[in-house]
Amino acid sequence: HSDMAMYLAKQSGRNTYRFHNHTLSAAASERLALETRLRRALVAGEFLLHYQPLIDAYSGEPAGVEALVRWQPPGEALVLPGRFIPIAEDTGLIVPLGEWVLRTACAQGRAWLDAGMPKRVMAVNLSVRQFQSGNLVELVGQVLADTGLPPECLELELTESMFMDHAEQAIATLHALKALGVRLAIDDFGTGYSSLAYLKRFPIDKLKIDQSFVRGLADDANDREIAATVIAMARVFKLEVLAEGVETAEQLAILRQHGCDFYQGYYFHRPAPMPQIEAWLAGPHAPV
Ligand code: C2E
Ligand code: MG
Ligand code: MG
Ligand code: MG
Image 1 (cartoon, rainbow, N blue to C red):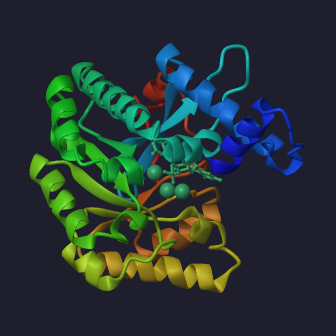
Image 2: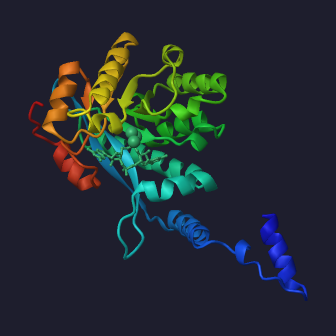
Image 3: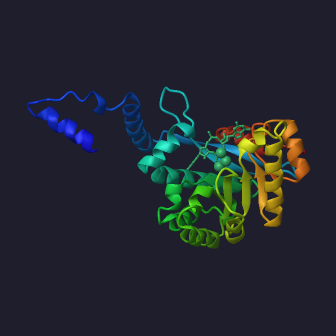
């Protein structure tokens, strides 16, 4: 940064200036420290995955799980992705971190099959940086080959922001991913700018209704309308539809009324470490 360069130049000169305004703010230096810690954390193996069940609305059975990354600095509290994913995205660290998540989740999915569990979906979040990295398709193909996870068990969660620029290239990437046999979902649906035309052209399997609309289902008529519209739209385009962030029986009842296919949320299960999820997946599961 030129201000910083000038600051350093003046510092080393004889007429040292006092650049109060140009020293790193507390927030910026904290961010820089966090960035360094994140790089080391990846090397030191301090990231881990929690898994949250995705529930089939008709059978009540778990249809799969979503892998959600966490950071466990030794001797400190567990850190949620909201604290570090944005920084990992800004710095590019998301690319190696995302590859680690993909590999770990796919290996876990394969291990569940090897243990005799039924075929279920393993959903993995992708960031814009990974989507635009240029070798995503190759990476996904390689990870599937390395882990032996059947492609139809992997569901990649994309966001609408990935399609905003370079739509043609995005469509080509989506088709190449579909050609591998994986499933594609749009995460946080309704918060971005997808047009109906996109939905028609994109080879998408599932819409995940953003939890901000689910939260207000019981007392906000607008949220109810939005959720109902997304569910109806999914039906028109023959897409599966899942509601994120289901916390109450009341929300569930409204979603069921509208014919939502899948649910995910604290009402069913919080994201949890593998042993807990494995025990829960083994059942039994009450119909919902
Ligand atoms: P997301 O993909 O939309 O994941 C759902 C988030 O909602 C998770 O937050 C989950 O714990 C939370 N959640 C689930 N059910 C409920 C509920 O009933 N109520 C409420 N209030 N929250 C619920 P989490 O784990 O903190 O992850 C936040 C976001 O971080 C994710 O949102 C996703 O965008 C991102 N993220 C997580 N893991 C990864 C990853 O491996 N790679 C990338 N690129 N992003 C990730
Ligand atoms: Mg997600
Ligand atoms: Mg989401
Ligand atoms: Mg979300």
